[in-house]
Image (cartoon, rainbow, N blue to C red):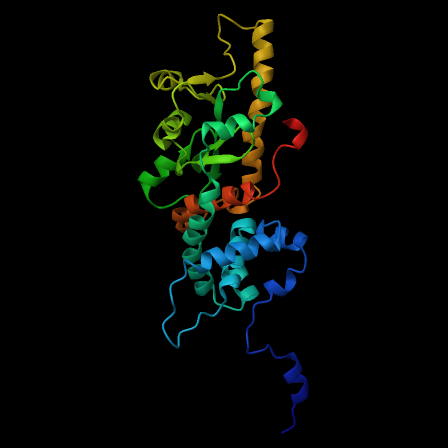
Length: 316
């Protein structure tokens, strides 16, 4: 019986049996690299690969991973930057969804180990040597703090639902604190907390106040009710003044102070905006990936610090 399709044609249209990763072939320039991974240069990528290589255990003889170390690192950064589903990532790397997920979960803690070294609380001399002009009235400032929230999938656990429900966002979230030096460098990221936690609770439990030396200053928005905690530690707290029912208008000096603090605090807002370029920290997080959120946050902070400065040279 004759066939309706030429066998030679079938050879041309059938999918190849040898699955290969195409992502590294796509990344031909730094623009494409940044779009997919958030990394600004191939030199940075290669440097990270070499650092992670030192953390890789030796493979048993005869056992070879489906993807090279560089491919697994690129896979992880693409997940962090674009937050694609593993079912979407898998065919791009020529592996199964399960393998894709396994490589991601294995690589995230290693990348954190490498990049957390560039997210460090500096010595006081480092702060003084890199003080922007807008901090002229607040030269004792050691850190500018703010909290941010990331939506998280609603899970079946009732207790987890309660702890992660944010009354501010009106949904389930993870909350974290970011500390930025006056120079614009991210010098602290906390562990994540359920969205129910207050800014005050996150600040105290994160331990950031304990990192500021005697007489140092912390700058925060007026929503941070940490005046007593700073006083107990002999720290200065720079905050915008408050309005009350009895006092509905600022004095001229208070208005100027509000403007000056707002101008200085914009650094931490810009830093958080940079972090949010990683969709893993912005879009709704799958509940099963929540245990990897803290590592992802440190990785993103490290990459931001290794990128172009938030402030131009003329601001110093």
